[in-house]
Amino acid sequence: MTTSTATPPATATWKRTLFGINAVLAIFGSTFSFILTLLGTYPSTNTNPTMLGNPDQGPVGRVLDYFTYFTIWSNILVAIIMTMLFLKPDRDSFVFRVLRLDSILMITVTGIVYNLVLAGTSDLQGLEVYTNAFDHIIVPAATVIVWLFAGPRGWFSWRIVWASLVLPIIWLIWALIRGAFIGAYPYPFLDVATLGYPAVIVNVLGVVAFAIVLALIFWGIDWVIRRATQRTPAPA
Image 1 (spheres, rainbow, N blue to C red):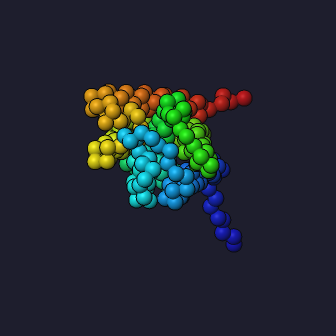
Image 2 (image 1 turned 135 degrees about the vertical axis):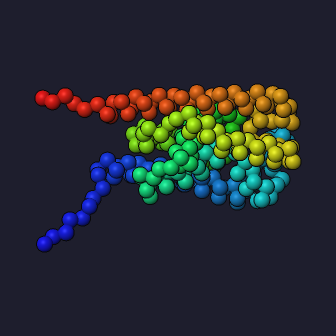
Image 3 (image 1 turned 90 degrees about the vertical axis):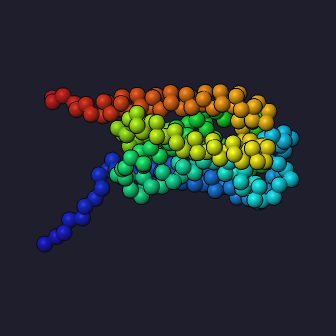
C-alpha cells in the first residue's frame, strides 16, 4: 500500500517563487542602505539645513533620518508583506489586504515621485548608486510586476482603499512631528520651514489624490485580469 504525498498546484509554486524574489530584492536593498547609513560610509553632502541629512550628526541621527523617509517605509513594507506571502501564499484577512494594497501603492508612489521629481536633486556616491537603484527602481518595478502576474486578485474594495491611507498618514505625522523638533524634513514638498503649513498641506493632498487615483487604476487592472482569467475556452 502506497501513501500519496500532496503537492501544491503548479500555479501556487511559481507565485510563491515570485513572492520570494520580490521579498529578497526588498530585504537586500533596505538592509544594504541601512548598513551604509548606520556606518556613515559616505559623508552627507546636504547643504540645506531644512532637509534631512545633517552632515554633523552621529549614527543615532542618521538612523532616525533613515526611518523618516517614505522610501524606506515602503521598501520595508514590501519586504514584510512579500515574505509573508512567500511563507503562506493563501494568507488572507482584512488587515492583510490593506497592507498588501499599501505595499503596492506606497512603493509605486516612491518610484514615480523619486524618478519624476526628486532624482535630479540626488547626489549619490559609491555604493549609494546601487542601493538607490534597489530602493527607487528595482523594488518598485518588481513589486508591480509580481502583483500583475501573481496577485492576489479580487482584494480591492472602497473600504480597503480608504483603510490603505492610514499607514501613509502615520508616516506623515511622524515626519512632520520630527521635523518640527529638528527643523528638517525628508522631502522638499514637506519642508514646512521653507514652505509653511498651508503649502505643505496642499502638497500632501495632491499626493493623497494621486495615491487614490493609482489605487483606482490598480483596481481596474485587477478587474480586467480577473475577467480575462475567468473566461473558459469554448469547447472544440
